[in-house]
Length: 396
Image 1 (cartoon, rainbow, N blue to C red):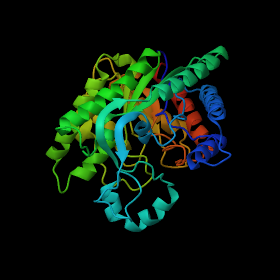
Image 2: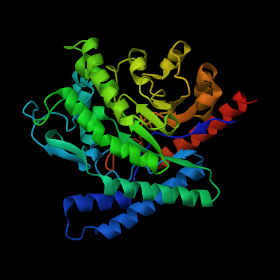
Image 3: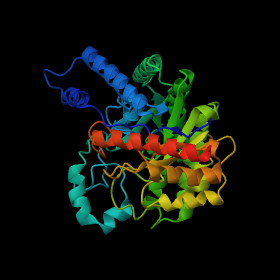
Image 4: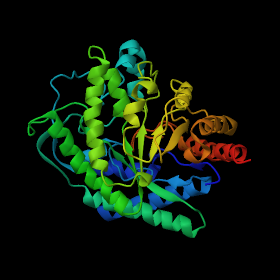
């Protein structure tokens, strides 16, 4: 390479007509969009969003996660056998309508969350999935549809003269196993590995299709705040080691240069005062057997952590994909700031080992977006321009 490439985390704001179709189908309305109409709309939407990414200058594009009809992580509940939704006897009716949240934030800022949760449009779908039988992968048709849509969109972009490659984001085993709820497996380890074995089919299919696989694992950092106190850091590390070992099992045989791993501290644009410092989990993150590490680094609670790379070595034959654009604010980053963030990291890990990225997805799913779509595209344009400025300086 002779420049800094650009990418993002994967989830992009869905177009209004696609969101409307998803809502109508979920509601079971009599005039809901038919299967054929929906598939045509979805394919066209993916084609449009890939073209827009190419036009703005993104090098490694995604399908925007448009095929995921629940959220970035809960989509997998539609692709696994062995789970059903059950009420959680430990949850109160007033609990936030999400399976996991930032514990310290909620405790310290209850007034904020009383208002904030009303703005988030959380879908009360499969809130408490419980494993009730053997786990197996059942999402082959949906996955092959997503693969076909993004490959067709990339081919069209290349035909138009854009040099792009594509990745598809997938969920990590820790998301399905952040707490053990099963009635079928003899141990937590057996349960966690069963999920990993099923997810392995999804990872492998993406690679076999010639795409890059990105494993999303927001729950790894978030669980520190949920386990420690009354638990201990050692309790968290035991929890995390099992799930990372299972993830590496799922990744076995997948080329490092075709895989990347993404962590963040949750896409909530909230205080984040309970976030675990990256330094405390760096060894865990870097033990995942992938070729790229996409890490949230523009969030004002974590931007200072670029200094960690002064003494934490990036694994050999891997690249760092720092978030240099934040999803937590509607302020559009100045390209000079983006360039500054990229250059200081490149000077620590090597200019050929940095790809400019975003902190997290710009949308949690079809119904929750973090920024307005016009601002999303302005942010991605700032990322591209900042990477150009950084490249001019690094390869001067």
